[in-house]
Length: 81
Image (cartoon, rainbow, N blue to C red; front, side, top):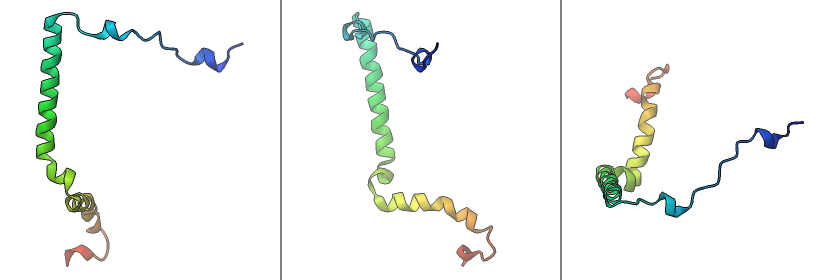
């Protein structure tokens, strides 16, 4: 008879950390270049979004602006005044 354990996928044994590390200098260099590109992208992204990330007044304002277009479909048009 089948049990629930027979239906659950079991992962193979996780490889040792030593087998996952780069072996050649070229591989290490490519890993370093990819990390540098990723970190450069994160720095540029944070600089571009610093105001939204750090200023709570901008965060609240941006979160509420999505609601404004829906008010114009109401009968009162309260936001037009």
